Amino acid sequence: MGDTTERVLRLLSLLQQRPVWSGPELAERLGVTTRSIRRDVERLRGLGYPVHAAQGVGGGYQLGRGKELPPLLLDDAEAVAIAVSLRLAAGGTVTGASEAALSTLAKLDQVMPPRLRSEVKAIHDSTVTLSTAQDLVDGDVLLTLARACRDLTRVRFGYDARDGAATERWVEPIRLVATGRRWYLMAWDVDREDWRTFRLDRMRAVVASTWRFKPREHPDPAEYVQRSVSHSPFSHHARVRVRAPLEEVAARTDVRWVTLTAIDESTTLLESSADELDWLAFHVVWLGFECEILDPPELRDAAVGLAARLQRAVASG
Image (cartoon, rainbow, N blue to C red; front, top):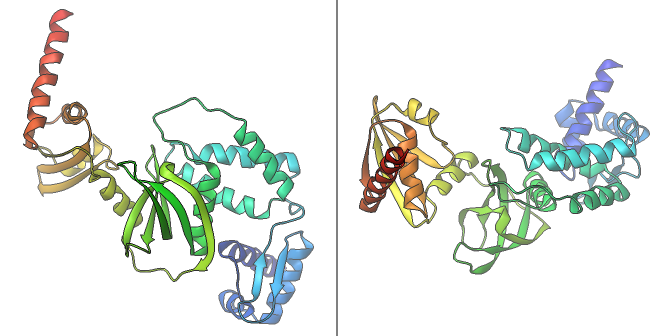
């Protein structure tokens, strides 16, 4: 019985990972016969999981949206409470919590009955959160993109570029990346035939298609987004030589917004971009290490101005 229960739970996990599995595919993954798969599917149905089966080309087993939540699990009030909490956590800043909450919410949303999903949305739409430094993202957009990344389906959306130009994008999404302040999507831009990063708060009318794609070889999503963010087309791009080892510099800055390169064992090159020179100058001072501003020259002037203001502040005290 123990082996059967474990196999059924593994089957359920597989069904949650993508929209459709053929019987032979599931049998190969679980190391059993297709007849065993059919019996295990019936066990899941008996527990309340809506597993659909379709014959023919493109057919297979699919985990549908349930008429009721599976018994272990949760009553209606508990399901709504958890879904609302997960939506809030998905917008949080605790390392790892946002991604885990989003993944869990995507699974819960898949089996939640429509009447409960509408209750969750009503609560979400009626809730106001105090503004923070974060750029808020619609929870439904997060879920749509998360499912598209999981299911390997293309997505279409309107996108407002940094200069305000409105464009239409058709992409193959690979991964969502949360920086703590913003959410980004790394995707293959079908029309531009290149990898791109997109800020979720600039997206409009996000719609997932039924067009499935085969994933391409791609850069590491976190590294790609980090480099894209630190080299974004801001007004100013700074290069600073820091007289400290890379590990020590990394401990004093946020590597999501800067690029660090070891020059030697005791010196690090820091690169960062911003629209405000004063912000870059303050960041250099905040590091707490001896530094040499390489460029732009205007950053040196901003640093001199910041030093003068700090000196006046101390003198006036």
